[in-house]
Image 1 (spheres, one colour):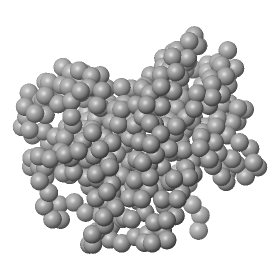
Image 2 (cartoon, rainbow, N blue to C red; image 1 turned 90 degrees about the vertical axis):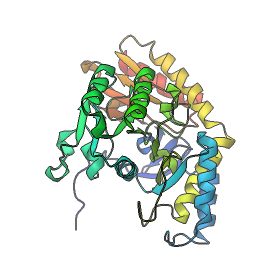
Image 3 (cartoon, one colour; image 1 turned 180 degrees about the vertical axis):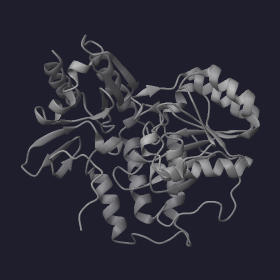
Length: 376
């Protein structure tokens, strides 16, 4: 049997990792500013994380949600405390797509409606509902296509108001990333998020804050949407939640009243997943990683804006997009193969920085020096 060839692969095999560095099979050291796509939040092989998982695995790795799992309660309490949403409720699943899928389903159960507003440039996942609200027709299979999704221009308050006036009583939910990741590190404006909140209140629609990539402290706030000073009804999270262990969740406002069987999962909230997620929050809190993300991120953004060759620097904290002109499209590849620095990208020419939240100023300077050599 062969692997189903859907990933374009770099000819690199990572064999070990520590902090913000990884090594390949030839013992070449790399600086990791990609974090496996914003997944590594507290650094590779963090000692507390490894200890937490190892200790849990020696006791019990998995049992289903048919029994009490105290780790789930501990995780909910810690997440409420660190995120500032103490009165919210937690439902645990395994991936960002699953989180968004369940959030949309929960919204439809809540108000009995079908229509969902999403935005140009959005990416919410690849499962049926999640991909239907993703703005990429190439990955939407015919079976995923639905007339229930309304795509509106990102950050366009007039279009949003007009759509609610025309169809407000049919709209179940609005789903939006606080900062679009795949869309090119584009931030939702404060007034736009506030407008979503007010219209959802007026029409009893559900405001879903997709925090899968832009959440979990990456921007210096726990959820990027918190910048707007209003609360969403549901926050979805994944990626950095488990530092590499598959775990995700939805944080649900108290107005939603659950009933048995409403949502379900086999693997979601298993013992190992909860141990991983607890370790992440414990390290984030102990080491003030949200503050570090804000400070090192501000430093990187300030320094990157000094390069005349850069068209635009976007983002917040350690979620940064560097838009380059066409003639510098080679920079991402050369960062990896000449300077041994992993970064992400968004088409056509945006370099994405999504490092661990404990990235140091020295690591930032290492990147800036290499980047400067390539763009001058």
